[in-house]
Length: 102
Image (cartoon, rainbow, N blue to C red):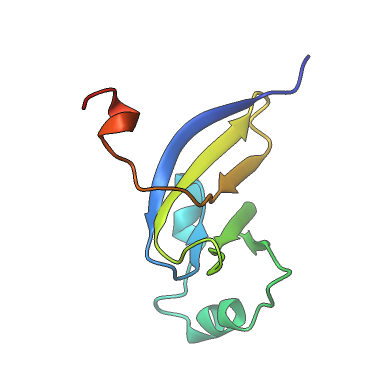
């Protein structure tokens, strides 16, 4: 099977890192009530992109301040749905030229 990416949506960011996970994993996150879990997350270095979460992994998503601290992050998955890519780009604001109107 040929490897391909599919756009699945976009997420707005205010520049703060966030933890992203599939809905079935949410019940395993205890950061709001278990300060040890929250502290472990806060102490992770920039090179860490995932952390164990119940039977799966959660992704740690952060923006690059050079590109921009606020804006849309485009989310893609593979045709096998075994990988996720979150892309941040720099460019002009979405305007009427993007929507085809003037």
